[in-house]
Amino acid sequence: MTTLNLQSLQHDPLIQSLQRYQEIFWFKPERYSIDVGLAQVGLTLQDVEDAEARLSRFAPYLAQVFPETRRTFGKIESELVHIPTMQKTLSEPLQREQSGAWYLKKDSHLPISGSIKARGGIYEVLAHAEKLALQAGILKLDDDYRQLDSDKAREFFQDYQIAVGSTGNLGLSIGIMSAQLGFRVSVHMSADARQWKKDKLRALGVNVVEYASDYGVAVEEGRKVAEQDPNCFFIDDENSTTLFLGYAVAGLRLKQQLIEQQVQVDADHPLFVYLPCGVGGGPGGVTFGLKLAFGEHVHCIFAEPTHSPCMLLGIYTGLHDQIAVNDIGIDNKTVADGLAVGRPSGFVGRAMEKLIDAYYSIDDQRLFNLIALLNQTENIQLEPSAVAGMMGPIHIHNQPEYLELHQISMRQLAQATHIVWATGGGMVPQDEMQKYLSLGI
Ligand SMILES: *Cc1c(COP(=O)(O)O)cnc(C)c1O
Image (cartoon, rainbow, N blue to C red; front, side):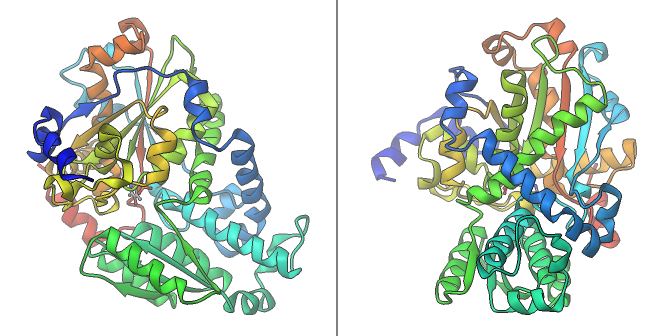
């Protein structure tokens, strides 16, 4: 980032709004065809289907070692539920019959680790374990993977280490899965990480390394330590296509889920999906899967805290991971710990910029208010990061320029399906949840 660039940014009205921590909504003024968007990703439907097949190979093993996945036969999947009371309350200012149908995608309650990271994080650990076991000849592709639940397999994985940097939930997912397989595992936690997540990991024998600084530093330090051990595999949240593909599987599965619930998606029934964004891998991967599944009929909108709008900044400036929110004087301090990321993934921003339809930022206090409101109206408990998508439908109704760009009529909008992607909260301890709820007004 040159000083010249930074100086010209100081006069940009959108940058000035970000610097004042205002809530904003932004989208690129161009509309790209779905083919152009998908071609830029560098990954294909085949890659996502391979990921789904790998998860299926592991499903019997997962069902055996994590009883909470037995109900779904070892498939790590979440419910899609109606939130009519929340919709009614939040959409009061709109004409109700126009507000479409609102759903919550409860990744917050995914088995094993209670957040969206149970998709990408666990998938990458499984992919790595499979690769090592195949290479060593202790596993074949058509074997029953339940044999990995044995002392022999665990002793094998003991020789290998896995490391990751995290604000909490990724560390939780990777720590739990790696420890279960028998890996040695180190989780490098940023200052944002909640104490209960560190305690839980330590109880499983995970090496938790704590940093007083933010996510970027935890990742960098984790990477450095990992490089010193040739048997250590560093899971790179900022650049990993494996993580990304683990998330992308969700998009294909959502298609099936909507068919089962008889929800139509086409030009007259657009689908809007609102995704909380940290470094970008989770929402980016899910968006890739959704675009493969629904093409131009799905609109994917990213939500970030006003204090950490890193993806918005990276895409808006075209600088991706070459700019961090601190560069324009934003502090990256937010109650939404899962989204407390100051510098976006360079891979996701560059690969996905023509597929992500819009971006908005949301104030911390509003996150608390939404958590409290969702608890009152639907009796669903989420962590602050996880409700960031909840303002999405309201934004879309107030954006005539967006609707015009995509040629969506009011009639079509009234028939739309809105999915708020709830990304975490299922494992938050009771007392911690009460604290969150008490902060809402
Ligand atoms: C990690 C996380 C996200 C965002 O995922 P990224 O891959 O960091 O963009 C959203 N919500 C919660 C609760 C998370 O833990």
